[in-house]
Image (cartoon, rainbow, N blue to C red; front, top):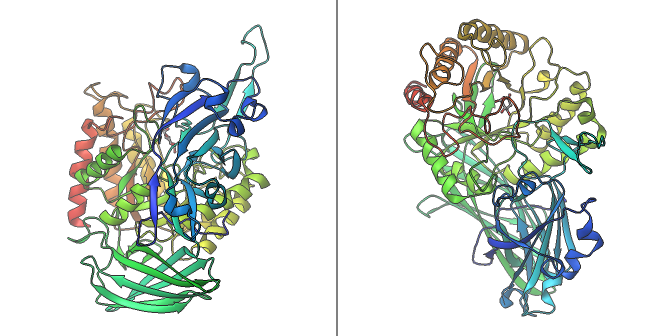
Amino acid sequence: GLGSGVLYPRESRSRELKELGGFWAFRADDSPGRDEGFTRGWAEKGLVETGPVLEMPVPSSYNDVTQEAALRDFVGWAWYERHAWVPSSWVAENANRRVVLRFGSVHYNAIVWVNGKEVTRHEGGHLPFEADITAIVRTPASTPCRITVAVNNTLTPSTLPPGSIEYMRDTLRYPRGYFVQNIQFDFFNYAGIHRPVLLYSTPDAFIDDVTVLTDFHDDLGVVNYNVSVVGADECQLMVSLSDREGHEVAKGEANCSDGVGTLKVARPKLWWPLTMRPEAGYLYTLQVHAKSLVRGEQREDWYNLPVGIRTVRVTATQFLINGEPFYFRGFGKHEDSDIRGRGFDWAILAKDLNLIRWLGANSFRTSHYPYAEELMDACDRLGIVIIDECPGVGITQPANFGNASLEHHLAVMGELVRRDKNRPSVVMWSVANEPASQLSIAEPYFKTVIEHTRHLDPTRPVTYVINQSFQTDKAAQYTDVVCLNAYYSWYHDAGHLEVIVPQLRYTLDGWHAKHGKPVLQTEYGADTIPGLHSDPPLMFTEEYQVAVMKSYFKVFDEKRDAYFIGEMIWNFADFATQQGITRVVGNKKGIFTRQRQPKSAAFLLRERYWKLANVT
Ligand code: GCB
């Protein structure tokens, strides 16, 4: 629940962690009702004891790892299990520690058992959740505990993203039991344990959450902190801020009962986006030290939080970071790669970061769901600016605007803000991508979601990404920035490059005139099969993608000094989608292939982004 923090687990003097990556036992429940795991007690009896298992890597999507089409397209409960030793120093009688089992993300619904006892459930992929399992692993100590996870990727009209199951009962045309999962978004619905699983341990009186808000005036940096400690009868907080070299630049104390205070830093080194200053992504470290009493005994806990001092503000025409106009040079991305699907991978992460820097880009949008914390950490460090999007993609049917949808949407924004609130890289929240914002119901719906998000975090602008026209959209009035997706000469006027300039000009001007807000192009592009060539350009060739880009650039440059605050091409790399007649083994709008090799477009974008880096 949201009653607690979800701090990224970091080692410290008082905190230890243990990664549970590697092979887990795995079985997809292909019984007709997909319910055998529950009726036959797989969690209670053990997965290995109740049937055949595969070895499944964690983290990874399970879909592309085997040769089985049925597993690639599986819908329903899939089960994972492994054993793990809990270090005895964590559970010894006088250890006075707690043991937490944490999942970086599991898609979509998850139920977790330890030694056959349910310890937590979580709805929704892409966000972390955890369970305090101290009581269960303490007895009997010195045996490995058994961790079982059931994962269900079924989407409904009120999940985020939404979907629906359609049963085909006409047995003349379909085999018995045939059904399809209809999804309302353009990427493959990968499933499994997608991000690292950890066991970690803290003292039983522990730092549960830290929130920082930063500001600066003239030559004084301000770091407001709010710390909550759980499990202590009494406690004192010592906080100190040190610079990159480890020198303390400010310190303070607070009583845990309120846990708030302000640190002041003379001549602060501000957090700047990549290429805006020679030194980008400057991070201080906030060391939080809690000294507690539990039943008269002392406890100490330490947690170190990276802190970037920066401000974000939006005017009618500009996006300001540290008071200076910021122009987004970026793209939409996906967490997507061969074999692992949406599974976290350090090598893919490193490659993507290197390509971002190679391009001279400074930003991206986490289309269309929150990305791994390991990536977010790197962006904080490197000065890469992020529009942080929740999984609100495909909200296109009236059935997706009901109370259950809204409640879940609000809860997801709560979880997202709780996870990413301290990140300097995150400069804006996106609550949705291309919703049916022309519907009347969209107006109160997005008013509520956006106001809720602003209430959770008054310091960052809030937006959603629009594919409606300025005449039909009903909810942009509630956003801080107008974010637009458009595919001129692609989905409309296919092949007619000459429509791009007039249509884009008309649209950008129309949006700005109507709302008096800065406008950002969050998507534009063209599918491109690498190696296809034609001059004059034809759709799907590398030349066509380049020609589309050049036409957009013309208008972007016209509007840049007026109200136009940035460009994000769709997409960084090719990515997997569900099968369909418009997708040739996936969406091919990447400027890189799925294997991260450049198409012609990548070189053009690189030239442009570096040129813009030097003028903006
Ligand atoms: C969009 C969507 C994105 C798609 C893209 C496309 O507008 O936001 O998810 O992949 O168009 O290529 O059609």
